[in-house]
Length: 408
Image (tube, rainbow, N blue to C red):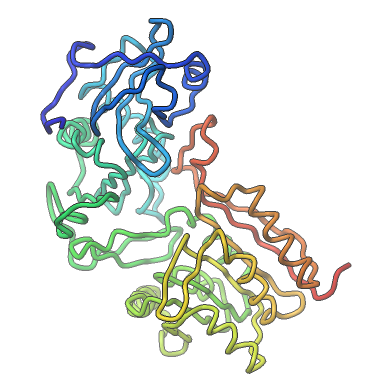
């Protein structure tokens, strides 16, 4: 196990590992995910180990080892003379801050992605900004072993951080460690942040770190282009951001459906922050397919339907899988959309490419005998820096279509 204070001086502590020529080309071209299948000899390296990759004894890259879904770790540097130390991380954090200068000075937005994993140089680490507070999300235990070095480098690069929280995406024995405050001030019990002039509440001290960062541009589009004088259904509504955007954009009425009953209080809270009377909107904690079935039976129709599902969610009676059930969900929703209405579909998963997402949409419409025209396509904003050699790092995608009944 690598101790918290473990520091690399030169390459003295790094184990050198020979990789195949094909792997060397892949990594040199910028692919950031490490795979032990690329090693010439079978090697067992513990999570957190820093290694030096070579091909025919020629340097290829520095990397760290960590088990994380379909990855064995991440490439850190292709520069043999750039050692993996506090100064290395400081430079990456400094560059990340410079890239987001525009957002720091945006008076309408004070919540954004500060550091986006491999796109900013450290796969397995995301850092989110909430009005001066930063939340570090560690996606694997290997990188978490180096957290003290990362926090030290961050404090050198970002001197005005009010406080730091951390979120662990890997299994730990103590649930109290998964989301916690680690440095600096604590945020107020209710931290109000904004995106494009829309206000939202967070409760960082209660582990409420989740936010619609990827959807910022989409929400602005809903507010400015798609909601005026419309009746809007938001499926998988989470914190109510879609309904907030729609109401501010002039929607007649919003209906927010989410399986998690805790989200109903979040929706109401966010309505109030935006001077929207929650009691005049419809908010239900129930299964999405049950509501769509109810809407069809009672002939309830909508001008705009937003399908914003998670990768997976389990209810008391059923579950939803993005990969398996999206086709059926679209077809159910089509039964409750007005002729000429708008459907907004999202997918936030590395396992569904934009090409496959478009095909799912096309197949669902054709099978249901509906016609559609693509109005807009949204991806995550500029703060979600993505490595060009790692397309699946750009996980969020949204397609907005106009709907008409019957093929044309």
